[in-house]
Length: 111
Image: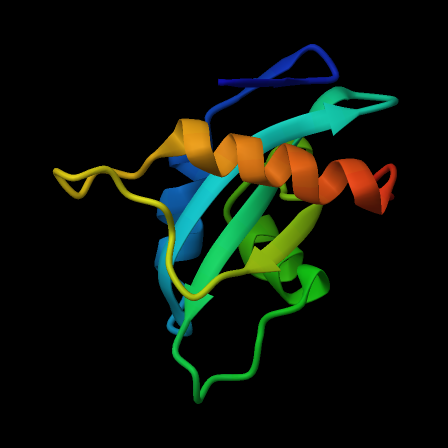
């Protein structure tokens, strides 16, 4: 669970919405620190190589039709593959560590 601005945000809910997008093949959502909100959700997507990469604006517009504004991802990253453990389950610990290092250097997120 991500706590953003005092609200509970469940990554699985956001993942279900984004997984329904026709250009998204795999998705994970993790929380990263945010100076104003405490934490904020970010989306990590795997898309087909032929599809244009979705921008954060496109992700937020798509998800915004189905989710409350405070649940919308504030950043999107694209990966070739999401980290999985030997049984095939998404490795959220590894993904969160990657996201923290990735967004720590990028500075505060604007949304």
